[in-house]
Image 1 (tube, rainbow, N blue to C red):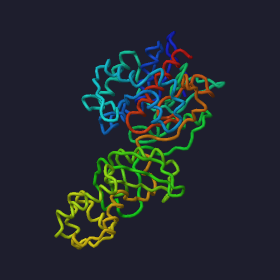
Image 2 (spheres, helix red, strand yellow; image 1 turned 135 degrees about the vertical axis):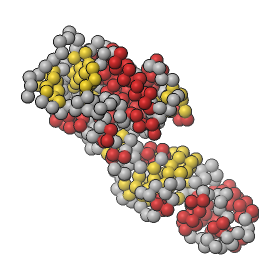
Image 3 (cartoon, rainbow, N blue to C red; image 1 turned 180 degrees about the vertical axis):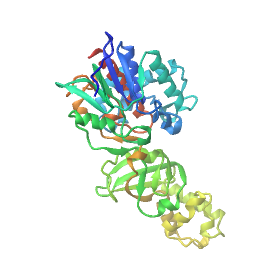
Image 4 (cartoon, one colour; image 1 turned 90 degrees about the horizontal axis):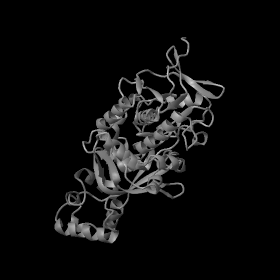
Length: 421
């Protein structure tokens, strides 16, 4: 092994591990604060995961106030007070617009580049890294180096390099093909940190039964979803929006958000209830059905539902209602109409589990926030070791919240490491 080397510089030397959203922002901030910064990225290009976020559009933040933001953080929101105060959602908007990326605000206060290209966000961060003098090294870091409770550097291959501070911004375990393969958790645990249990979050859900497979590919808009704990009867999630049936179960914005509430999912413990007509109460919906029946009174039941349901849902719906598909509309009873109304207002889908973590948008769990100073993002166990982004046990719902967590914690970590606050 080669002897440990250090750059010849009076500036404080900082290493950043991970060239994603948190890593690049931390490197930029540390360099702007006067540090000599080296960013280690094991992929051949930066921001690999960032390039595919938001279906390639990159939902960079959510333009809401701090209280609303924290209400969208189900895991350890209080840890983020200082970070959000230091670098707010408006600061994120200003950063990218000043970097030459015009932004727009869409439904739900979600912020995207006007171009709808995630690559523009990555390019802006890369440009800023170069402008601030960040040295980018495309090598895999193998270990952190600690002496007497203090960071002294890192090792890559047979080379050891000395640094005054090391920032671990390696992301989680979701989308491992982008490089988020859990290295950071190993680094943290190797030096004594607690890594809380890791779960997929913002991830599709596997369903029991054959209903979802029969509806594979069907997208529903403007529906209401309620997820209930079947053991306690308690509703754990409820919202309105879009979802999609798949061969394995359910996905789409509503489902991904719901998954963030289900860390203890086991087969049959939770049930999804889908209201296909949330704008109509049962009485109004029954009147709507009667109107359709009047219009199609001489048709078979199976041929009279086109105005009420998507074509792909008609046959599964009829099976759920247990009505003879060839029954004439003018023969459908009141009790059968009531079954129709109940089904339209509550299609029940027993949930079985999560899809694999490599299909998740983010990882829930991570480095315990009890061991990290929220004012500096420095380890309470190892002097000169900092964490930022998804590696921390903090996560949010869909809508730009997780990228904002990455940016805010990175700014705090980067500036703190540069000045040894």
